[in-house]
Image (cartoon, rainbow, N blue to C red):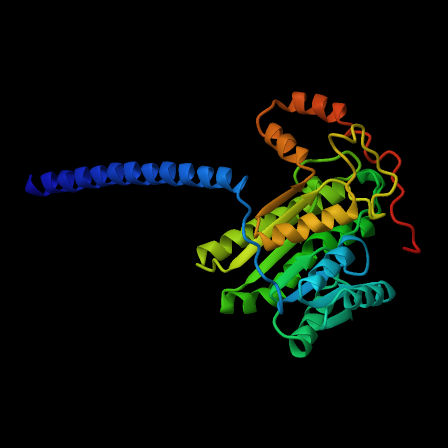
Length: 324
């Protein structure tokens, strides 16, 4: 009898403790949520102090053209050491020249095919020996087939996943350990709005970018769980940028969903990194569209998708010419 009564008492105490913990943790969540909402509201009006990247080692994949080149030039003006990766040697050399013209004192250009794991690891080791530990890693390299899924050759689908997704795995594997050891670093994923919502004619591309976003989010959470709050994450999800990669693509309502100017996009990306923003969506109308996606019925989503022209974005896609 005494033993049974003792067990009941212990169970009762455990239940009371669980209830108390539930109440305390719930109140803490509510309090912190209110605080962070207020903080976010205040920061809409008070600019966040931008961090200095002078002397930091910044590695940019896909630096030989487009956004990669423009971001490199902007970091050069901020006094960073630039490590440029691209599969196109001529394009990468041109970026290196422009970066030096814009004030960079230390610039290192490497030919690297980011779709190949062994090559990523090999060139990464070379960078560590010749330059040092990378502080800011910008995964920018990307490709697009621009074909309907059923028409896309298997080798191009595989290449899309290798460049747009798996390359991020290998570069993180190569450079993240040093960031963890020093509790200092910044991981930047140049993803896409196509990594947040499916787009007709971009099945393989969307899949690769959804994966890139999920990967970056997960690793960011891993760093927080490890107590490595000195390692920041920025995930960039732009609409089409006028760099040639999506030549031929159209937008139905350019005032609402404009095709982005490359100079504007690169400025916003670098600014988001300096402000240590976790997410950057461009244009701002994407924040509204993504919020809607999660609350409206799927059939309404189809109606709105048709309204903004999502079914026709890729109808006249040509992509970047071979000479580019």
